[in-house]
Amino acid sequence: MQLMSLNRNSLAALLAGGEPLVIHHWDADGVTSAVTIAQFVGRGVSFLVPPFTYRPKADFMNVVAGLSADKDLVLVVDYNVQPEVYASIVAAAAGKPVVVIDHHVSAYPRVANFYYYNPAAEGDPMGLWPSAAHVIADALGFYDPMLIAVSIYGDLWEEALNNRVYRAYMNELGLDVERDSGLIRECAMQLWASEAARLTDVIGGLAYSLAYGGVDPCQAILSDPRMTNAREAVEADMRRAINDAERGEALGGRVMIYGIKASYRVTGMIARQLARQNPGKAVVVYSLEGGVGKVYVRGLRDSRPLIERLRSKGLSAGGKSQLGNNVVSLEVPQESLDVTVKEVIRSMEELAGSILLA
Image (cartoon, rainbow, N blue to C red; front, side, top):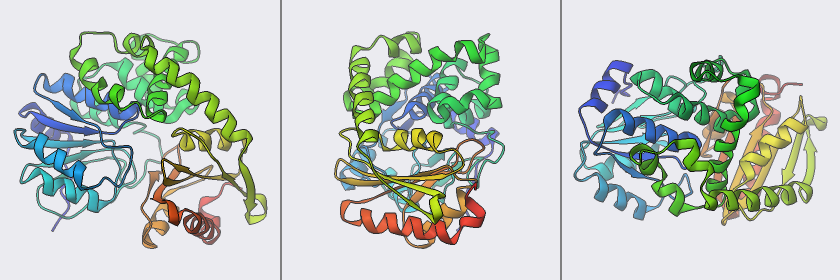
């Protein structure tokens, strides 16, 4: 069966005529993507945030089945999972079209009623698709530039200031990139802290309130004391985790390895910080988050060969191959974490000439 990739016009037509269930990632990009869709579609959108895992169980699919029963289609936004998970969502939707909108390097299932719109599915070397919310805004031509700027900053962080797409949205807002990005960063940090602290009650209702609540998005996010309190706790936990990390190296010091212990979902952000502290080197960071093994690799010249190599070895690798944002991420059972880290290092050694900077 042929993979069904949508174009801009077909995506816009599909959304304009339906009432979707939107399954969206729990981070800033996922939330703002869902809000952007709702602002285009209008009333009638339902939202669902997956549990904090890329390997959801059958009970989540039961929820999808129930919520999609009276909807026209199911959208999966910025939630980069393995093909079999997408196929399970298609099965749960029971004949309704399932459309993935994303900007990660992705592999998709060849099943009926599955469609995708992802201009970065095979990589984004020019950095033209820095967030899923931007992918949606570009396709629909209908968006809040502040929300899209937050989505990009929440994915790129400080690198956003060098991204041409982010700069274009800031110009559209009449904001100076260097002087005014502090506001965007604060908004993105609040959302990240909610994700890291697993504030399911906050994140679960956020897209609806921002889309339909008649409030200024950044003001609402910055004024939420639950997010602010979570941010203080999460940032303190992250500092402790970095200070106490187990350190190692491979490939003659070209790859730095960090094992961390943290109370919150901070492994990805720690990997980003450690990559900045080790310019010219690759960084591998691993941890247990809620009993699940997490591995992140940053500081690569190109992440796509490593993603493909790990997938060929049966690992559920995801990530982005993007200008200024090359990252590989894996989520594995707790008992598989050590062997997965070893396999990641072995694969990096095999691919060193094509993926490492130095």
